[in-house]
Length: 111
Image (cartoon, rainbow, N blue to C red; front, side, top):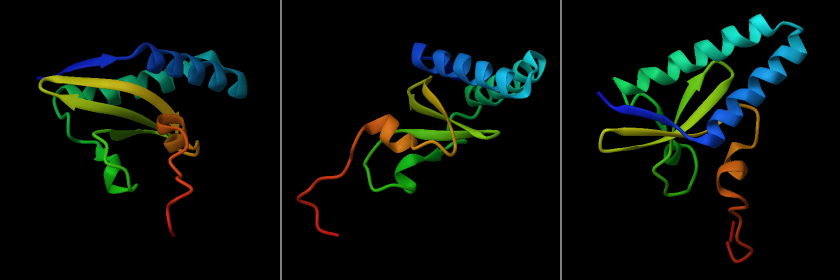
């Protein structure tokens, strides 16, 4: 069984997501329910750390990041030995590539 370690940044992401949902829905109870479901999904990584998809399979960047769908959100994580490190959690419509890696474009690249 792997240890799931949530980074401080990912904890802030969860708080921000919860606050946003509570504000938009007008219901802290709805927000709490969604955050609980997200955490339950993330906890599945302790038993199945490779259930998430490799980020390198959808972008042309060599990275050890994997991602796991949690409703409308994506948890980005790395798996080493018996540890799963949850680094960030973003809405699936956010530009998560730029948020994770910054600007990957290189003006010398030929397309």
